[in-house]
Amino acid sequence: MTQTTWKIDPSHTSVEFSARHMMITTVKGRFADFEGTVVENAASLEGATVEVTMKAASIDTRTEQRDAHLRSADFLDADKFPNITFKSSSISGTKDTFSLTGDLTVRGTTRPVTLDVTYDGGGKDPWGGERVGFSASGKIDRREFGLVWNQALETGGLLVGNDIKIQIDAQLVKQAAVPVA
Image (cartoon, rainbow, N blue to C red; front, side):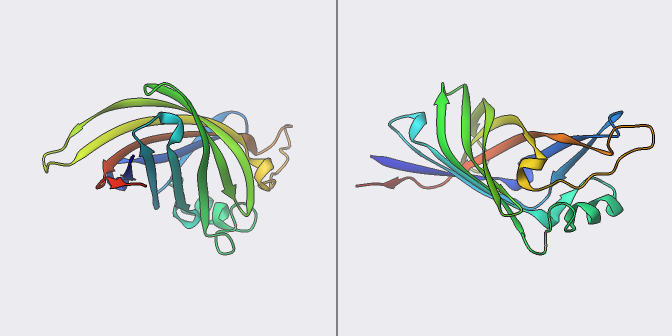
């Protein structure tokens, strides 16, 4: 049996999220610093594993004051918990569309998360390498990860929504295959 490792190409990948603000608009952001791998075997999709690490301090919503607050102990506590990680536990479906379930760890709290994934295509790059693309989406409740800070509004409601939508568009680069005994 042969295992193949694919590495995320950070210059052609985006890890983004969105949350409701005052329940009247959506604020979007991204993580700028991340790395990850997918390890597959030729036998089946179900045997593949996915591991991703994002640097909490790399959060970027295009507003420095908000980003500093998101890095603080009120939210990600990036000094104490510098990494956000995802490690897959199961994959089910077809090569073209599948569910990817795994453990997401944010701020030291680990919860299962399922992402809906679509295979976007693949091929050779101009340098002879092989690349594939995937899109993934899902949703988490931030409170399940200890992200409970909020502020009541005079008009009713809360400043920050609890549901966080996740959108990932990933390009992976094939590494040398390794025989496994």
